[in-house]
Length: 158
Length: 155
Image (cartoon, rainbow over all chains, first blue to last red; front, side, top):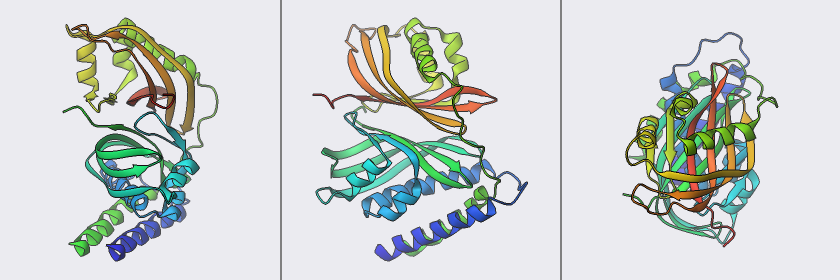
């Protein structure tokens, strides 16, 4: 698991970093929205894998400076607060992964998706024990994609 | 299995790398937009049932996630607001509105007080911390997503 995760993150970082240089080339043709949608879905997995593995370097790289997230119960955190919660030694997560990813909106510099994220454990003083419904926002800044924010609610409706 | 996963990831990222081959994104929007007014107009329109405005203001991609995780598309939500089961909304009041603008998308957060009831008389009263996503299409800001969370932070 660790090796696979490391390879995946390395591949992701290499391609995304290359995008910075590519992003400086003038008048490149627009990427198909299908590619951006696929990228957003992958970034969703990278985001949650990094959170699950307490990979603060990837989270620092992934989160935009103005990142914001609202958690179940209404707690609102910025980039540093979110990373601090993830790195908190008191935090215990047994399960964290997204399913049912639906890319709702895509443009050349914005992607908005919903997913059902399964979280089991305790983080930021909140006990999670099941499925959450989430909207995640990705933006392209200076040639590379970053996570801008997320809104999360505990899924109780069926 | 893991090998397949990593291989698939690399392939998808390879295709997706086309997405990076763009010129730099436009600089983040600065000022000029009255986010407070936009948020209030949005909620006032829902409260008063101004469906003409909402039809234009909601992007086709609009998705509403209520505090219990119930999710509605634009068509579904406008159908409820215009149908016999339309909720009676006596108060939809957003305060502490903050906007984070990322070029052609902005994330608004606010604290919204709701007072009202559904078509069966069940109370909808509550205090919510809300995550709103608006996108700029053809120069116009439109709503594309909302997540409502009951505010338990002060209890």
